[in-house]
Length: 410
Image (tube, rainbow, N blue to C red; front, top):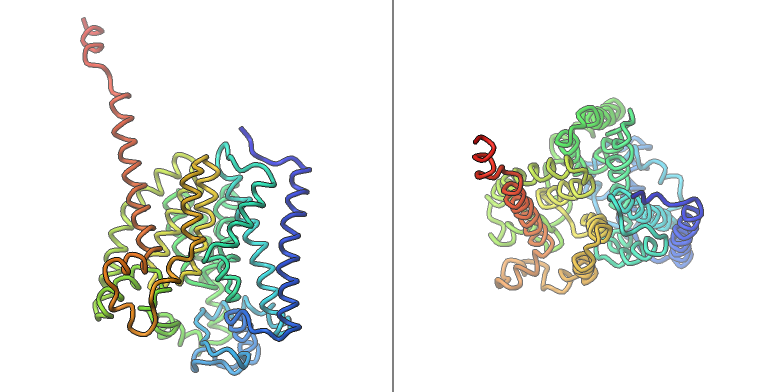
């Protein structure tokens, strides 16, 4: 049964999504005119672009001289990101947050629509429901925090979703290129290259790597010193982007670092756990992809990437949106509602944190303080268990009846 919307539905969707984008941009204008300080990260993006255009160094100092006076953050992205952020240099400093907020809201609407349409016999076919889910998702802690900080997570989410579920799915010669661009901004989207390989899209995976490498190569030609400094020092220093032990680092590395009070072996143990989890995750991705469940397979890879990354700030968990859309589109309303409530609750924000507080949590606080990591790992293992049970239920039904074989041979 096709879920492709009719033309009037498409027009209604465009109008509704456009209204949300206009509201976001209007909020940005208010922030600009009032001189309010929102979007520290968007200020870093713009400052990185300006620093690149001026031929100055990106990684030699903790604070770029081109940053707004109220922002004191280093540029932690690859050199190619500075090139891709150049359009932000054309925007007035005070309007940068509003522009990125509007683009983020548009990206969120695109993600909801594309994910809903990718599910076979989707229950999310009507425009009012799609818009309702989009508005609901704006309340998820990773989503509103991404917008508040002026982060680019929702844009990268939309880029990956469009590449895997639309461009690559249609067999386009551009499949994988968007993932390469996303990885050039933040390295974490590189997790989707093995996803392409696992799902049989070898050419797309190679194209993603080639795009990523080409962009980095351009930066080695344009700014060789900074490019070398990034790939030999900055890229391997997780502390450059903040305290790894802080509660808002919802990754295995963060969880183990908190539990061990920042023991020197923390990252090694976290990587080992991630490597073990990658085995059932890869198996699950292949099974889901072979069954035509592209969005479910993509979600498995995304959440593995979140827990495996050395640093996954809570606002990186915008993949909660495709997960909720997937559950609702498949008619699993209660499960989808439960996941939505979990991310709406902003639970981790109410757990004591800061300084060395995380090192002194009791077991209950440790579970709550690592809530995103715990639920992701439990969810992955539960999904694997469901698939294994599916095999046990299916195999006896397919096996030939012993008496039937005997009767036939007689």
